[in-house]
Amino acid sequence: MKSRRTIRHFYLSHESPITSIKIFQQFSGFDSASEEVIKDNENVSILKKDVNCLVCSAFEPTVVYCNIFKNNGFSVQNQLILPFSTDFDHVNCASVDDFNLDGKTEIILGTFGQRLLYYEWELNNTDPKNGQFILKFQRSLPGPVFCISPALDLIGEGPLSLAVLTSRGLHIFQHDTYCLIKEIHHRLDNHSPLILNL
Image (cartoon, rainbow, N blue to C red):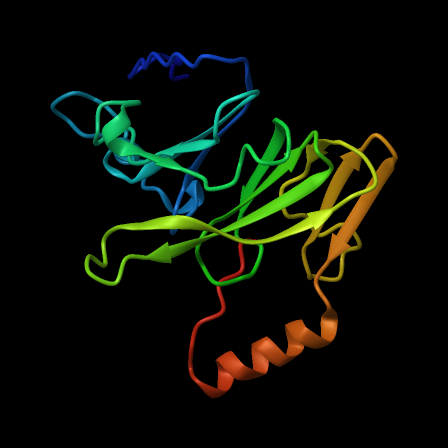
């Protein structure tokens, strides 16, 4: 049996309490990562992939540290600040997943100010390898948001749902089935792949 060991150690300091941390890959999940070992230093190949870290803190903007293994950890140079993430009191929680089924990761933040903030990745027109997260929409809820689930198939029918816990109860958000079927037909007509993380 292989033993577990630390292969990298990073240090991060923020001026306020950290409320949530999520590790993710922007365009493909960890499932597709190769398990082969690099012979010279015995680090798994995941270290060669673009691994990002989302850090939410109580009184500072939420940031994404991009390519933490390639850029040697957390620094201002590889930091993307999520716009408007401090405008609705502090961020309590976050969820990172492909919520709109486009093959790219989206970020949803839950705030004490009773808001869900939804961010999508947008490529930079001048440099296709770079981009930023843009606030696409926000939704008001009846109470402060305490927890957001990853995308889940809660009812066993395929479309993914999102469970959000607020001080007023549990709220379930689901894709509109009609819109989902319309999107599938559109992608089949255009021969565009529909990527589902099952």
